Length: 295
Image 1 (cartoon, rainbow, N blue to C red):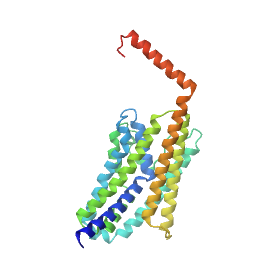
Image 2: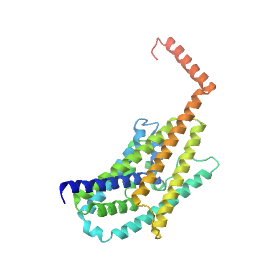
Image 3: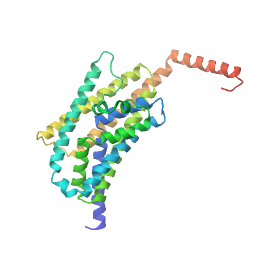
């Protein structure tokens, strides 16, 4: 194979793996964990909390790259068990998705409602990590998420099927996968930061809709994976399914951002809000005069 053909083949593989990384970042358990950590760190690290998803993906990537490296070094040994690993990983993923959907449905059914999506893996974390207010706690949390068997089996399967053997190729596959995952996870934390930074009843309603979207996503992906595990062959390739999933998530992101913008705009136009803002500015001017302009 000449150099041009080799580069073309790698580009196709890279696009495929990047899409799979985007899909992995859209995992509802990722969304729930990033949501929780963004809210926890908002007061202590308001700037860094916007990029909780990036920090989470960084910790997760350490484990993904370690797995890819192991596959590259022990490719022949992994290859003989790749089908078994993929099957076990699929069933673990199905159980996690349905359990996560059940947790969120229960939260939505409570009288007081829910203010954030529930995550299954997050509930299994040590309490100090689960309630940590430091934005940088997202790095070890992401690392621990990478220990999940479904993640390990997915990365191993991709590295074996797409890299064709070799350490450098396997690590490159892992790195491209991580880039896709980081893109989706970062978008998630930016969205949650936008929700948390604004206040008001309408924003709370939008947050509830976001929880519903995560629940529907978990049920949809879980049912799709269950159907495949039971022998159903989808009429479209897996890459197209990944594209549809990510597009749906981006549509929810866009709708949520638009809804918060509309709610904030209406809130600012409210006469009572305008009067309160004017009163606050007047009080500040009086205080500045009495302190010689030091405020």
